[in-house]
Image (cartoon, rainbow, N blue to C red; front, side, top):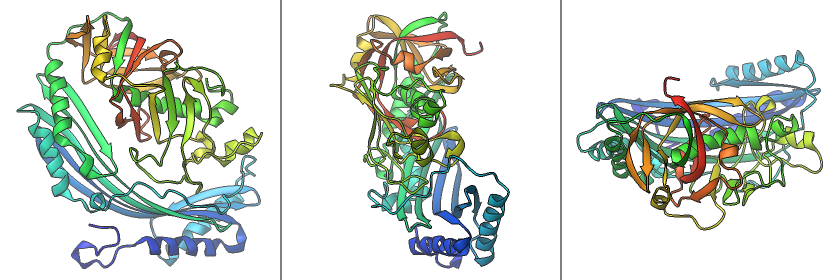
Length: 463
């Protein structure tokens, strides 16, 4: 089903891009001279195929159109959202936002609406992915399951498409559309799991067979694990582990609000990471997913956060840029709830400053250490230093003399990725960069495997 096609069952035409723009203009007209306003109208269409015990057990679809407005009256701000888009629904939306603004205190951090500006990149969109249905997702699932050669498989395949229109009282208008396709699953053998995932803006890019073979290989290798004592081990972290940690760096580190309030490690101009690493955010890169503008309507572009180990920039929205002063400008990283959270990078890349190494060579270079496939259930213990505690899962392996010698039971870690990625600590950067889920559910991050001098494991999975 395409965006803008007829609904099944004769329900009539769906809301298209022109209609979204009309809804946004109607809301601005309703606010009128009573205040300033910024409006976002989004239509989303998603499909999810779940599988367990190597069989598809659920197909669900969801379609939604929502309108959100932020109003400003005498320096007082308030926001409201609705999915009721008839005349009464829009009038109630505006009334509730204006009524809430009247009783709120003046917002000293309010930095004004975004002025009109060139729209730039609209988003990563693929028509075939927007049209994909259960049959197309089932084909990816079948390839994943069959690659296990009899192992028990579970996971999901998801496709989504969205159109979004932003408009405000200053005359700024911007629109875009984006699609996402992902498969994430495990194969299981005698209680040992192996995982694999892949994500793109195009369903055609998903290789279910390759992901399934990867998960199957890890599950077979993870059988009959042995316990290892707590300690600091040299490690190779696979891309899922690195991507997981990157969310913590984004929220607690490069976020300008955290820096302004003295809650961040980040210091622009200092070499706080190993020179082998660079970190950047780029919504326009074809390897990533999402829209080309933030919730304030600011177009996104590449932002280098770490160049060859040196912190080079912070993420800003309009509020943090105004607070920091000194000519700071928004970097296009405003997010919903940013008045309390700050500005967050959601199209992150971590990569080598120089030439990467084949991923297999990272393991081959280890005398003795651990190969770690996945992290989960992590929490921040100290936001300032980004000390995180969590668990490994879906495959931990002992490496001796450059070869995997056996599986290891899951371990608890307590480690700061800032320290682990620090100067002199990165021994190799792989050439296997890929999108993988972040640890704070902000989206997907693009990262390779890393060989690190040490990672601190503080107990087994129950301690």
